[in-house]
Amino acid sequence: QVQLVESGGGLVQAGGSLRLSCTVSGRTFSSYAMGWFRQAPGKEREFVAAISWSGRHTYYADSMKGRFTISRDNAKNMVYLQMNSLKPEDTAVYYCAADLNTGSGIRISVHEYDYWGQGTQVTVSS
Image (cartoon, rainbow, N blue to C red; front, top):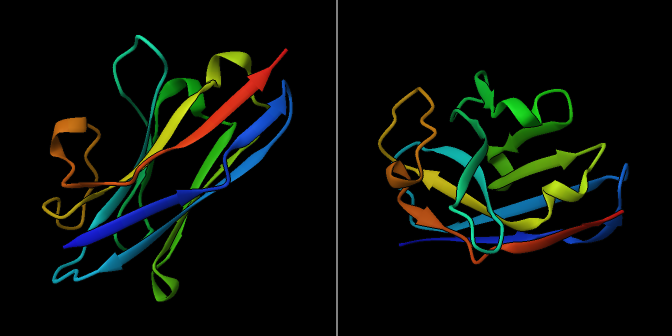
């Protein structure tokens, strides 16, 4: 059993910044990659960013490149998403997720992740 809990969401103005955190707890018997996803009302859940177990590999959706940064601290069982230059279209519920089956790599599909947090709301006003 693996549990993920997000925090750090809130209301910000366009151009502002937020830092999301994800705490991983429970029994993790293998290494795992981590990803951030988001879902806006009426839309499918979409990939935002991912990071390998070692932290040496990261990958971002095109619309996030240059604005968002994913990082992790395995000693603290924490994953972060720094979001800068936020836009109204970034408004969504943001989820962290764990992929226990990717080995040393990264995967970006919603269906490939095994555990999910409850989500944290990010609202960007104009």
